[in-house]
Structures are given as structure tokens and as C-alpha cells.
Image (cartoon, rainbow, N blue to C red; front, side, top):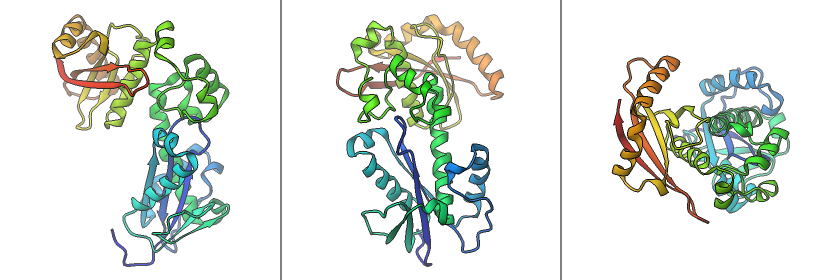
Length: 317
């Protein structure tokens, strides 16, 4: 990190109010004369305008940083403390050490980097406006990816806020692992293993958990076979961090304990694997990439986090 100049960072957050998803903060250091036109509070901009400004800010800012705090951490320390933590992380992720920071709203408790709260700072300070834009675009992109995994909740449209579609889905399908369990509407809709069994949702939930595991491990989800709620067929198509097409079979752990058992279960899907991979190559114009077929076993454990195992190269296409 460079600290040679008196850099001043603007900091803002998005995602305090949603029922699902992380809270995200942005920190931006702008040159004194930045020449970025159209900056304003991200809430007052259309999605199209935010997306247009996002690469311009990245290109013309002296430095940008993003801080993300997960739903698990939000539930652990509360949303107010999580917001402060996201802002601190955003400042820490800048490529330089700021001389000071201007925070939208109230100042941070930590004064390791001297900072000052600015009421309605996202209407007054350009660097805070820019920070609100990069935070909003970053969070919306995260929620768009979650929307692929949980299309029932409309996350790609509502970003986790409690819209009518979201609340109806929450009541019908119960909460997901990306919902904030300490938030009142979510507390009332927590699924139990018994409820999942009674409503034929075990495999459905295992698929969702497997997709979250992949997303957290930097796989790009391309397609999820949402129509498949049984044990037959392939469940998830994704691009690995090393740019390989990987097709996934999701298996509930009670039906598979080791690699040999997983391979036995998947033998009946070899033909489907080859057909699906061929169709996906055409759909996404991936070219001559040879797909790999992996398996993910998911074990649901009462009152504990699920246990997921990743078996690579189960079937060669």
C-alpha cells in the first residue's frame, strides 16, 4: 500500500435493509479534479446508469476498495456492526492508505484511519457518491448470482429486499442459507429437516446448498436444472476458476458415502451427461472445452451447518 500522499477516501454502504444477502461497502479515492460526470447517490440512479458509471469510476479513481460482510456475520454481530465492519474492510482493501476518510452517515468507531461522518454524504461528496455506486453494483451482481440459485425469490430483481414476490416465496419455500436469520420476517420462516422431508424438498435444498458451495469457491454458475427435484440427471453446470466446464451431480449424503458409491449412482447418467454437455457447449459457445463431471454430496445435519464433499472427475465425457 502507498501512503505517500494525503489521500481522502469516500465510503458508503448498501444492503442494510434487505432480508437476504451480504452488506457491501465501497471506498473510493478520487483525484481532486476527476472529471467523472453524473455522480450521485446510487439510489437515485437507474441500474443502467450505475452500470455505465461503474467502469468509469474504476478507471479514473486513484483507488477503490470493496468490503463484504456475509449473512452469517450479520447474524452474529448485528447489521449495524456489520455495516461498520464492511466499511473498515473497504478502506483496508484500497491500494493506498488514506490520510483520512469521509463516511456517509456516522463516523466509524475505529479511528485507525481518521474519519468523519457526513450526514447525507452521498448527496454532497463526490467520492462518497462514487463509493455508493461501486458498492451497489457489486452487491447487485452478487444478488444476481444468488438469483440463479434461488429463482423462486426474485433476488435478481429485489436484491433481497422484502418485496411481495420475495415475501410470498419466503412463506412458501421458507428461508434460504443467504437469508438473515435474526431479521424478524425470516425468523418465522425457518425450514426444518422435517419440513423439507414432508414437502419433498430435501433434494431441492441439497442442490441449492451445492450451488452456494460452488459460488463461494469461485465457480461461475451457468445453469441449474431447477426442474430436476429427483435423484435423476445432472443438476448444475458451471465454469471452474481455471475456466473448465464442469457438470455436477448433487447427491444427498444418506445415499452416498464414498467415491465408489457416488460413481455407482451416476453410471445411469452417462448418456444424459454426454447429451447435456453437448447442448451446453452450443448454448454458451464455450468452444472445444472438454467438460468434466464432478459429484457433490450434501449431508443435512440437524442444528448444524451442512457437510459438503466434492468428488472430482467422477465421469469422463
